[in-house]
Structures are given as C-alpha cells and as structure tokens.
Image 1 (cartoon, rainbow, N blue to C red):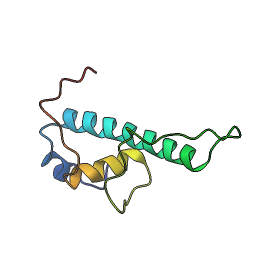
Image 2 (cartoon, rainbow, N blue to C red):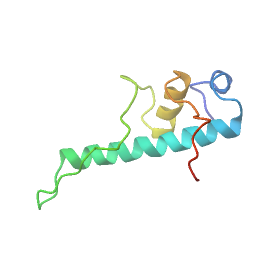
Image 3 (cartoon, helix red, strand yellow):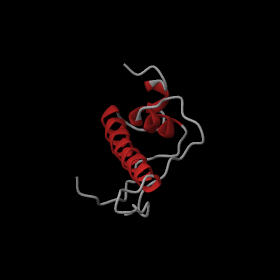
Image 4 (cartoon, rainbow, N blue to C red):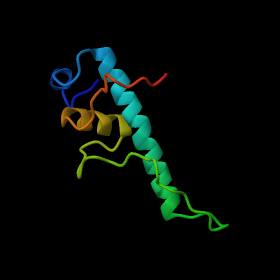
Length: 92
C-alpha cells in the first residue's frame, strides 16, 4: 500500500492508475540503472575498467523520503518532474 505520496495527489499528475504504474515502473528502472552504474563508476573493477554514466538519467530531486526506487519515482512524479510524453513512439 502506498502511503506517501498519496495516490490521489499522483492521479492529479497522471490520467489513470495504469499510466501511473507504467510511468513509475519505467522511471524506477532508470533510477536502478543509474544507481548501479554510479556505484560501478565509483568502484572500478580489478582490471581498472570504469563505467560511463553517459545516457543514464540522474536523480531529479535533492532529497527523497523513500530509499526504494519505486518510491523515489513516485516522489518525482508528484513533484511534476516526470511526465508521460504523448509524442513518444517507443516500443514496449
């Protein structure tokens, strides 16, 4: 159950629960990838190989109440920083 941010507040930003779930899921995957790549960039392997953060989408807020990527994504949606791009033709 989501306590924060409230579903009612989130639905003011997104037109349906389905769209909210899809948007939060996609953003949470981006956050997870960024966190993993950032950790790998800060901790090169024994061969000295580093990871580029190019193409990763960084965190959008300075402070998050949630430690989990889904909660962080929902906070970004509530803040209006993550929205659905209706012109995107991305295949899912």
